[in-house]
Length: 385
Image (cartoon, rainbow, N blue to C red; front, side, top):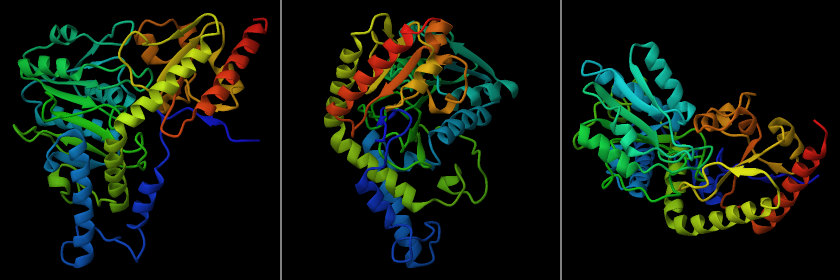
């Protein structure tokens, strides 16, 4: 049996061969394997040089100063460092944080933890299309508000927030603004030198880099105060202790450099294929595309197939690899909390599937996947309830 067609690029992407090849040179004795914190010999100097080159590549893609890039194990750790780091560093100035109910669990769970620690979280509700008006943020800001944390693009629906407008609301109020850009990095232009953003979480594995590495952008001017969450050596200018893995860091740098070169090409490619898949599915009655009226990432297509049980649908779709939403919540049988926050009924949320196309998806893949999806949905709908 042939491999299923992979349509879950929002969950993770394969590592680009050129990226994997570069990473391989930082693992074995004949490569640059040393600890980059070992500054007493040539091996360590070479490793540190590679780490700093990669830091520069990440910074260049988002318009940052390399000194504003703090390496982490991924966007989840970056989100935790941003949220908990600000909250604990500035807790004597206020204890109020603002976020949205459609955020990734990497933001939702730390916010709930902070609630248990005595902080007050305002959970904003989005519009039915998943968008969030800046006025809604402005209306809840207070004298004791420390931080607003909102994603750039939603991992389930692909809906894009206007982080420029949202950030200006925060800047006018003197409130720090954190953005989770795990999904948008390398897919949308980002220039933190022009955007009113103070902290930004980044990930490699959504943009054809390795898993296990990410970064947090921390604005330097004026300096954002953070309390480190990992202690043990004072690495990364005291913000994140732990020995860096040069192969992963180099992989992220290389992947983001390639993403910068291919961004326009990739955007056109995945948008065209996403729209072709949408057209293939239009032969089905009673389907709803979540967030379709809002600006979305080019590769996301979150579709509800009314009258079809979502679990049965995912099981029956054995020729395509897809998910019902975030990979972090794929083990639960509860309907998507993101879709419910958008006002989608439980029944329709249960019938929803996220398709996400990527750099390696082909028109042949879309044709075959579209035919298979339509056949499966029609067959399941024909089964008496």
